[in-house]
Amino acid sequence: MADTIQIGDFTVTVLTDGASYLPPSAYPGADFSQYPGLLDDHGTHKIRIGAHLVQGPAGTFLIDAGAGELVLPFPPELAAANDLQDPPPNMASAGALPSALTDAGVTVDEIEHIFITHLHLDHVGWLMKNGQPFFPRATAYFGREDWAELVDNVPQDDPARVLMHEAENAGILRTYEPEDVEVLPGVTAMHVPGHTPGHMMIQLESKGEKLWFVGDLIEHPGQLTDSGIHFMTDVDRDRAASERARLFAQAKEESIVIAAAHLDNPVFRRISADDTWTDATHN
Image (cartoon, rainbow, N blue to C red; front, top):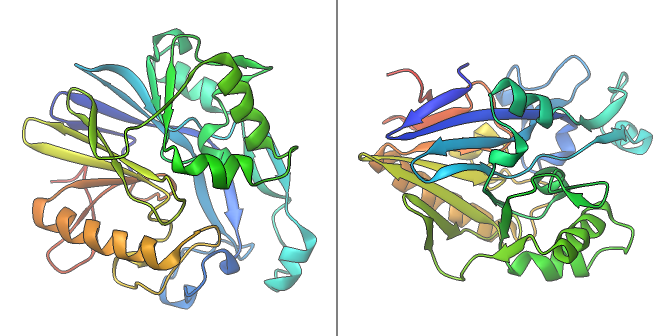
């Protein structure tokens, strides 16, 4: 599995912040017996937490910002509900994004923009650290429709709410325009609601090639052919499914590379003529 890909003049690098271990119930409608190998020895689906680094003519920027320093023990009631006899100790743990950046040869001062797909904690966690912007020169963009649902409408001590208010007070936040808009040369933000109300997709386009950062609109590889598979935090399952169907059709027709936030092996995917995933780093 390659962790970088070239899209015209853009270089895209996967940055891993940590991992989450999700039980089958996190994917309503999914029959994991149809997808051998997705569940580990604990009976959970291990997914990557992280971000994507983009370097090119439009500068150096991130898609999403990881989860921050996070340790979330596996809830016993969730293990019981999924009949997990040996659940992993943690449902999620993260904190490796700074070292991943260093390994990529990039400093926090070089990041100029952060294009957030949506406001769940595992996508905004490194916007702030100790009450200060972790990326001192960066402006962070998000879909304005997410604020009411994911910031205002959650408990006051919710970590994502606290962090986003800190980011707001620090003056680093901006919202995307409500329509598809070019945010940088060759970089377009597109509204694809369903997982969250303000969920965005970011498109790179250079020298006739396209890549879509689809965030959490795609959470399970089986969603390519099974519209009945959803994710536990989708706010509008039907809308998410219809957006996926539309995007899959276009991506297949135009051979667009898809980079979902949590899919691995491969990270960068295309859709083949027979509606299967292929590794976009292999020609």
